[in-house]
Amino acid sequence: MKLKSITTIAAATFALIYTAQAATSYTGAVTNTGGSTYDYTTGATTGDADGDGALGTDGYYFAQFGGTTGVNGLAWDNNMVSSTPGYVSSVTQNAGVSSAGGWGYDTVTNSAAGTGQLGVFELEGGAAGNEVQFFEFTLGASTPDTISIGLTVDGSDLGGVFTPTDLRVDHLNSANVSQGDVSQAAGGEGTFESADHYFFNVTGAVAGDKIRIYATNNGDTGTGSRTQLHINAITFDSVPEPSSTALLGLGGLALILRRRK
Ligand SMILES: [Ca+2]
Ligand SMILES: [Ca+2]
Image (cartoon, rainbow, N blue to C red; front, side, top):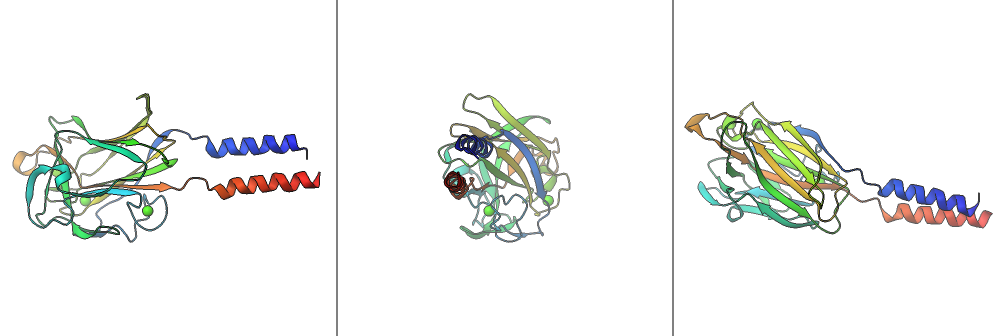
């Protein structure tokens, strides 16, 4: 085989590996995670893109994690345990987001943060059918090709009220052009204190892109006629980048074939 052909093949393979298809997809759910306790470090295969058996390996945001006393209306970041992924350069939130919880909500275990009680990121939903943006994550250097975003909902009391009917994840490129968004019905069973996790893959994101998290008011006013929307936690896991060993292998193959010429 001539070196020119080898070079062409190598270039084509390289392009295959690195041509990122921008897409957003719903990838599955873990629902009613066993009543009042859930361990993010065991059995979390759905959405665990890196396959290490834990959710939130890259980073996480848990509302009111560790709190045991009902505290209402504090700023979202005053009632949170978090670890921002290394590839997220900035996090912004809807100014209306606050945090609440502590009244015997789900107890969860996270590999880095230990065991604590979930609270809620709380946001006024307005009228039925109204969609609001909770968070926006701007991506920076070393953004992986595929990010699994996990959203935990329904991990509190008044399930029907605290469960948004609809969650949406949107991926915008640096020019604010949508690279794909996906919705998934998220609830309705209204089980008291039994959290549900919904997972969305964002593929082909690069530095400067944004990932936005939305929820829609499902119109269930429930007890107390509440219209707030709630998300308990957000987790980030990623599929590792194609390893440099694959490229080294290509280089080695070219070298071997060249010697055989
Ligand atoms: Ca549930
Ligand atoms: Ca993981």
